[in-house]
Each structure stands twice: as structure tokens, then as C-alpha cells.
Length: 522
Image (cartoon, rainbow, N blue to C red; front, side, top):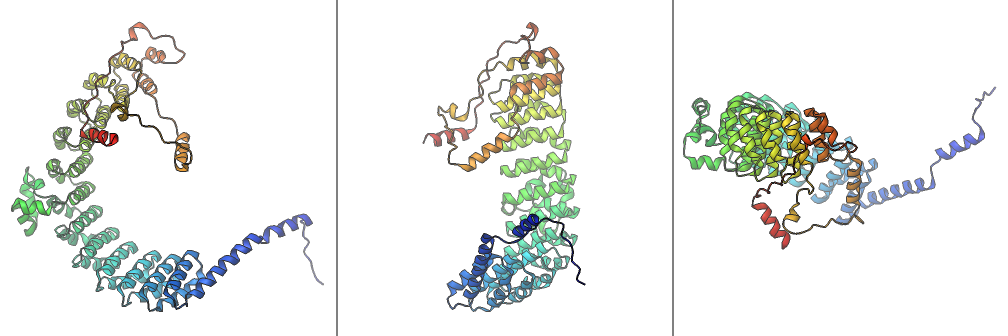
């Protein structure tokens, strides 16, 4: 006897479910159209016209249909190396594991461009079967294939490739050596420390930079002295550190350190290498680097000086305090800003006088950072200079001064804070200073700006100067002064009133403003 299962659903519910499960006409038409495009591209793969076959390969890559994998693998037998390169790129985009073995076979293609394309395509698969073939590709006769193989081995991250990558550091091509050093960074093996130290003396600055970066990431103390020697003679000549350093160097490095300055300066002439070396020493965190980094503060390149300031800020060593205070008068604005920030991080009261003088710096960024660093140090000697900074022409400096005065908590700042609120006109913009008015662009027809404006509207509004002063008075703890700036509060008591003070004349900015003014007028 046949048994039937009763369906508790109503006929209307069953009809609705059937309509939902049935594909729509639009969906069927779209799927048929996609399938027809794939079939058309597959048919075009057998065309005798190379342009048609190339267009078919690109179309199959964009379609992303797995049914195209086998026909694309068969297309690797094409006699045109350009088609084979495009086929390998398409197989890499499809990311089907069936394509790994044909790609490994393509590493033996007679055309070096095809071999290089196969290496790049294998990176996307991250398959361990590719490690040993890529290690053999490090000995390919063409430098492009070797360089891409080194990069691919670093991405795969297999420890079996360490020895091959170490050997790649001696390759005649500088690109192969550079990619080999960067790949060793991703593998993270201490076996590579000594070869990378030797690479610090490579004739190519890109290889030296990659070697220094990798040594900093590996974190091995053996790299400290070689990295210091890579900074050039300026870091070795001064201080007592030069005496124990030189005997520890290799014969070649010692000859460079003691030899003629011209050869040393040519070797260390690339500023990017010195910056990378300083950042590597910063990551290593060895205090033997403090005195050489202090000597580097006199480097002719401002990027190197700025990197040295950042590194010394991380060390927080008192030996760097006086040199950093002197750096507050550096010719470059960025270096002065970094020095002011570093002194705040060290937090020593010996830097207060230098930071007070920096409140008169021509750069508003230096003045603002100096005020915030005085807040971090917390010395009462900064009260009067910070009160003067409440009338600074730059709004950011005034904000920083008010915030710092609130954290210092000295009642001497109450009247000046209230008087600073009487400033009617905000600081002049650059366009106002040169007599021009910059009109804002219209928002209509520019969806990108409309989106940015919408995002800005959703964010919290920035603090006003009145709110910053209110917070400062609250931290100082003067309730009468805090009540006097409340909108519904009565007028401030006479003893809390302070006369309006004239605004400070704007310090002369560097020549950059003059250049911008001339360009704007032209």
C-alpha cells in the first residue's frame, strides 16, 4: 500500500514557494548570455588569427568560468609566446588548482617572458609544489625570471628556500640580489644574518637598503655593528664609541672607516640607505647605537636627520638630550618638529628652556609641538611662555597652549585664559595674508566631494577654542572662572577680568610661503 506524507502547508504557500524557487526570466537570460559568451570565447581559442585568440583569452579570464581551465591549458601549446603569456595570466586569475602542473611545466619554456609569467602566476596559488621548481628558477639564464622567482619564494615562505635565496645574494644582477634580500625578510631565518651583513657592502644602494631592512626585521644583535658602519664615517669618527667599534669590523669595513673620506662618502652617499639603516637600528633597540645616531644629527640630508631624531626618541637616552635640544634650531622644519616631539617623549626637564625658545619658531608646527611637549614634561617654568602663546596667530598653537596650561594646573593661567576668549578675529589664512581670496569649489556635480562632505558631517564636530579653555579651567579647578564662560552665567567677577591683549605679530615664515604666493599670483 502506498504511503503518502501529508503536507501541512496551504495551497497558497506551496504556490508562493514554487514561484520563489523557480528562476526568473531575467536570471535565465543572463545565465544563458554568460554561457553563450563563454562558448564563443572557447570557440575563438582555436582561431588562426592571433588577435582573435588573444581577445578570447582575455574574455575567459574576465568571465571567471572554471569550464575554461582545460581549454586554456591546451592553449599553452600555441606557437606565439604572447598568447602563452596571456594564457598563464588568465589561469592565474581563475585560480584553479588544475593549472598548477601546466604552470610548473611552463617554467621550462624556451621564451623567458613565458617563464617569468609562469612564476608570477604561481604566486597566486601559494602551492608548496612550486617551491623546488622556483628554487631551480633562481638559476635561470635570464635575470627577470630569477628576480621574480626570488620574490615568489619570499611570498611562499617555505624554509627550504633559504639556502637558495642566500646564494641569490651573490647573483650578478642587482634586482635578483635585492629581491633575494627582501625574500629572506619574509622567511625570517637567522641563517641569513651573515650573508645579509656582507650585502651591506654591496655596490648597489638598492641591495644595501633591502639588506638593512631585513636585518632590522630579523632582530639579531650581530647586525648592530655592521649597520653602524653602514652609516658612514660620520657615525664612527666622533666619541669614544669609535675605539671599540673599529676592531670589531671586517678588514674591508675597517679600511673604509679609517681610509679616505671621499671613498666613504661615495659609499654612503645614498640617503635612502642611511634612513633604512637608522630604522633598522631603531627596531633592534641596542643602546650602542645612541652615540653614532647622535653624530648622525649633523648629516647633510634632512631625511637622515629626521630618522635619527625618531630613533633617539625611542631610545629615551639622556645622552641624546642636549643634541636634540640643539636640533630644535635645525634648518629644516620637519627635523625641528620631530625634535620637539622627541623631547616630549623623553620628558626631561632639561629640555624646557629649549622648548620655550621653540615657541617663537617661525613654523607653526614647531610651536604647536613644543607646547604639547611642555605639557608632557609638566614644568612650571613654561607657564608664562605658554600664556604668551595664547595670542599666537595660529589657532592650533593657541589650542595647544590652552590645553597645556590646563594640564599644568597653575592658577596664574586663569585670567589669561579668559582674556584669550576676547579675541574676535581668527588667524589669517595664507590667501588673506597675500591679499587673495580662495573661493571654495561648487559641490554640484561632484559626487566624490559630496560623499566626503557627508562623511565629515557624520563625524563629531571639532572642539572650539571656548571648549578647550573651559576644559583647561575645569582642570585648573577655578569654579568662578568656569561659570563665567557658561552661556547662561552672569558676568565674570572683576577680579577675574583681564584686559584685551593685542595679538602677537606673526613670525616670518620660511621662503616657502613667498614661493607659493608668487605661484598663486601668476
